[in-house]
Image (tube, rainbow over all chains, first blue to last red; front, side, top):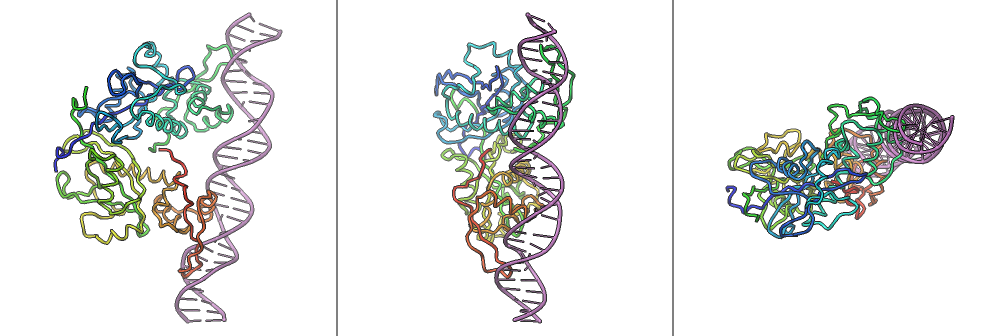
Length: 221
Length: 221
DNA sequence: TCATATAATTGTAATTAATACACTATATAT
DNA sequence: ATATATAGTGTATTAATTACAATTATATGA
């Protein structure tokens, strides 16, 4: 029984890339130039090469599409239904990436291309089973926001409590009480003060950074 | 760019099959008859065929190994490191199955074979990266016990509160307070009374079953 | 039948966590 | 000086979790 006794499926990685821009949760999509689903928008992805791990393949695709490195990247789920790709048997390992909006601004300038950020509120029809992948990703994103510190990967290194609360409100699509939010967050003891930001025309906010080595707080799944 | 422009990895499913036997969390392992890792114990698994989905492949392997159908089965994580299989590039989609100890008793009779149940407390050295897969599975199992009703899939249809508490204690490897456990469980309103079991030499316990359509209570991940 | 063994069943007080809710502080702009 | 804009903060209520032990129902053996 050698490896070549079995016909092999193709394996791809597809990456759900989230960022927060203009107070909105956005998703990077690419317009397909070829069949199948030519002209439809799709989650970026591609074939896994034999000399790279799944994570490396996802990272490579991510960098090719966005130019950014060092982003939060996590595997989601592997989709392997028979008919998910009309070209043949293609199994895709889906990933989720969270990109800092700062770094993104550089890229979003290149706008009239076949790679675009879409608001999660106004998504086009998607190719393949990408709608399903995206639904899964959004669930996971919210779960991760609730139980870990991944949210901070979408902020600049120094940030205010208001900024954090804002991205939570965007991701959960609801408002939180300022006092309770701050209380809970500060109680966790994961933030380090960094002096106040004086360049605002109102009471200047305290700047914080995530304490080093905090990671994701909990590391399940 | 067709599918055949890329060399393809092999894809397998590996299934971490848990059950509870003799008040102990057990895991089904198979002894490898061939290289690589000949003689070592491994999580059951095998190649995904082109005419079956990942879930179907896992279900087939599970049935081949244990003979049982209709078990709880969930995808865990996909492992795709370059060197995880010395034969070449093999990506494995791992699954976790929870098997009712009742149904299992039939199979565990066939014991002196190359398929055996091992206590999680006394595991042999495992082939491939199966130790990593198993560690992941145990985390997931505990998480699922905490947040869903999968535990009931390891019990007969009718069960007592004590039986449930027992399997929780086994899985978490710690004891829980009887009063608080029962309070919390009954408060969930997911159990249906089924009369009392009179065949015991002590106060007879109430039998319960899971209300129909309860599912997993929460369905994230 | 009476005593014993065994596990089932049940409640309350204390602590901790989550929620609801509104005013004061500090900077810039005019 | 006043207006504007956002930051920062506290307390009371409710809900959830935890800690903790006596009583009950049945079978068995004396």
